[in-house]
Amino acid sequence: MFTKRITPFACIVICLIVCLTSVIATRTFITVNDEPEPPSSQPTGDNPFKNFLSLANKDDAERYTKLAQLIAFIDTQGVYEFDKDAAWNEICRAYVRSIADKHAVYYTSDEYESMMSVEDGDFVGIGVHASYDYDTQGIYIFGVIPTSPAEKAGIKKGDSVIKVDGKVCNEESYYDILDAIPGEVGTDVDITVLRGEEELTFNVTRNIVPTENVLYEKLDNGIAYIKVLAFSDITVSEEFTKIINKAQSDGCSKYIFDMRGNPGGSLDEICDILDLLLPKGPIINIVNNKGATQTIHSDEKCIKGEMAVLCDGSTASAAELFTASLRDYKLATIIGTTTYGKGTMQTLQPLLDGSVVSYSTNFYNPPSNVSYDGLGIEPDIKIELDEYWQLRFFKMTHEDDTQLQKAIEVLNATK
Image (cartoon, rainbow, N blue to C red; front, side):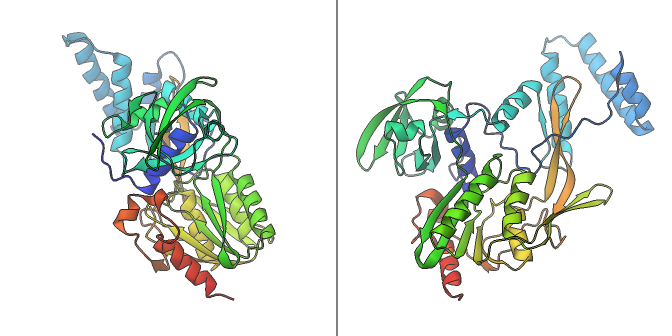
């Protein structure tokens, strides 16, 4: 049984599963470094263990020997058969879980291959943005991607998926239903939705789904409302630029950037986006474990206008860098609740058997060079959403959204 209190961040994860992927999107990798660094020097030769011992200090050599001794006893004297590959994978997982780095993850070679197929853009599904629906125990659709299979079939924003291929969505079957929606290109899936009081069933042919990470709406008084779902896709900066151009052509000169529930993404993408918004100066300071710092700068070209940023406890990683950067340059009023507090960058390190460990290798600091890792970013104006709407985040109207309303009030007060 799962906990039904799903945060906006979890909603985004669910959205990615339903919208885009046909594999393990539930293992969302919050990072601003989406390119694996080259493997560091590794022991080679016929006996890697001896090579490890030769490279290790005395304490570590004793630990390796202890592990080898433990394994030898079990392998030679144990009475139960077991999968040695699985046991070794669990040893590696346990080591990674035990370190202070809460963002570190161990992947088997199969898991890594599946994850990279998602990262590389092999997205197959029906093309909806979705979250858990507390009212129906179904899947609430808060957006349908243009030209997607879902749109072509007739599924609409506001529908709630209650059955997939005849299987009812409820507390016990919820995640099975999620897994059943993606599939192979060209295969069909029957999606039954609740639209008002009416049940409707649509036959949808799965296909490659165009990505849509940036949502835009023009509000009154020349305010552009721009929600970024994630920075993980390699086209998100292009999407963002098009949206800014669209907002400007619509006559907007004030901007609300909604980073609530945004888990982060690519370093290149967030830097390209911030370069569009920031004046000449630092964007990010990357600090390694030796204290050496690399700074990425923006140029002097940037858009002009009053800005506000909406954030919450699920605003993480690159989304926090976005928030902190606009704060540091005094370009935006930050509204909402304290952010997640992830100010580290991960490296994907291949291991000898094709498995991979992801672990934190750098701190990334905003323009002020003050780390928020483990602390989060405090908003200028702190406003909690009503608990009812926290559980129904994507069903909330603009009028019910007290954080958005405060941002509109702040921008309307500027001249």
